[in-house]
Image (cartoon, rainbow, N blue to C red; front, side, top):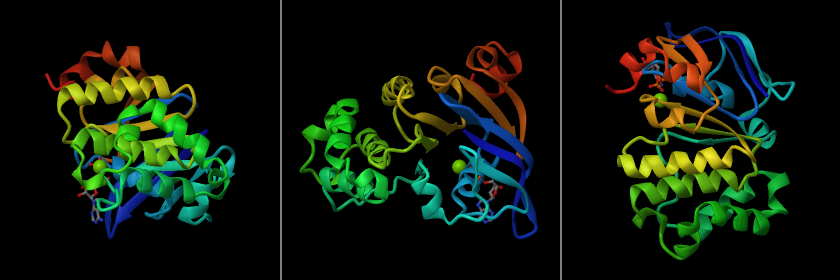
Length: 233
Ligand SMILES: Nc1ncnc2c1ncn2[C@@H]1O[C@H](COP(=O)(O)OP(=O)(O)O)[C@@H](O)[C@H]1O
Ligand SMILES: [Mg+2]
C-alpha cells in the first residue's frame, strides 16, 4: 500500500535516512528504532514535509513526490504526530469534528464516523464537552488517534504513541490498535518494541537511518538480537 524506494533525506549536509527501501502492506506494521534513528523523518518524508534527496514514495500505486502535503492526506494518509497536536482549548467534540473536516471525502460521513470513533474510544463520548487540554495523557492520546480516524484514512500513521504514557495505558492503547487494524492499515513507530509487537503483523528495525532487521512480529519477538537491544530488558 505504501512503498518507499531507495529514499534518502538529510538536514543540511547531515544524512539522516540512507537509501532506505520499505514496503508497508495492508494490516499493521511497526517501525522500530532508538531515538534519532530517523523514524519521524521518514513520516515527514511520507507527508512531504521533508524532501527526498533520492528515491520515491508511492501510496496505493500513486507516486507522491510531486504532491503537496494536503494532497497526500486526501489520498488517505493520516498521521498522529509525536507531539500531540490537539486544540487544547477546544472541546473533545470540536477536536473530533475538525479532524473530519480536513478531508473532503470524509466530510459527508462525519456523523457516522464520529459514532464509529466513539465505539472505539467510549471515553471520548463521555467527555464530549470537556476541553481537550484538561484530559489525562492517555485520554488525549485517544483523542489524537480518534481525530486522525475522523479523516477516514486508509493508512493511519502513529509516531511513538506510547511516549509518556503509563505502561497500563500503553497496553490498553495497543489492544485497541490491534482490533482497529481490521478496518484501517496502521504504521506505528516506537523505541521499545515489547508492547507494540503484540499489535503489528510485521516490523522493521532501524538504526542510523537504515533498516537493519525485518520480520513478522513472531520472528522479531524470537530474535535474540532484537530482544537484547529493543525489548528494554
Ligand atoms: N529539523 C531538524 N534539523 C536538523 N536535524 C534534525 C531535525 N530533525 C531531526 N534531526 C536529526 O535527524 C536525526 C533523526 O531524527 P528523527 O527522524 O527525529 O529520529 P527518531 O524519530 O527516530 O527519533 C537525529 O539525529 C536528529 O537529531
Ligand atoms: Mg521521532
